[in-house]
Length: 390
Image (cartoon, rainbow, N blue to C red; front, top):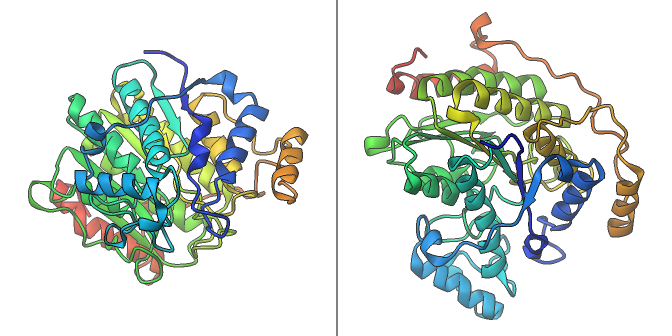
């Protein structure tokens, strides 16, 4: 297996553009890749462009009728069929939508193929992580569910145990739906509570169905949760599940919208805590996953200058075994690019100045604490189904 990480990138993914008033501004991808290059991470990892996902690949998750509807809307956005979630305020139709969405999906599928075949141990597609798309509908800024497609491709190639960890502020509902009854896939989502945020799913009691009962895990975090609580929740659930499941591949989704500056949600997580979870995922891969196989994806994130590029550049650095010192000064060339593209001043360092800490679950919990109540609800709902102590 190659010791060099793989960074999946094609400039054309920046064509995933819902328009100037939409919060998912593709400049976040442009600026992330610019920061990756400014730090020389494009030399620490192999930058590779995979082909777009074809219909046979898309059908691993999506219905052909839906793919056909996306293709029609791509040719004539004014004719988008709202019954498929297309042409809505969340998912406006745009010219080339099918081609660009399939290209993003292709990067995640290509990443999965590369790690499974031993061409690399770690592969990153920060343009991916579009976890809300359903088999037959667009949802939540997501047209094709690249995360689910990557997992489905791994299963097609022969994987018997794939774990998916989603730390986006929104519930990873599309991925959970795709594998609801499949015991080969363990989906774990940590997200803001469905009472206060889209998509209003991801309750602790959602644990999978049929043969997959116990394979869906949801930690619904109270609005306002900050670094300590977020990290405590992650470490109180994820390591124990991975130690038990022993996946052959780990797929992670790193939406940056948990950040306290994000305009669309209500958690209060810092860049430093996001980096800490990325590093923990890397550690867990090497501890519990066969061959250290890791596919890392982006996701949400709408503080497109101050947060997203720094968060995902840290992710690339960690995956490439070339981590960036949080105290390092952001290269001036990149800050110039930020100003040229956005007329905003870019951040000066790769840190929010926080030193994240948390208390381990084993040290005890407070039944009156809302964060601990959320963690306990998850453990009680799903751990006994997996033969683990709640």
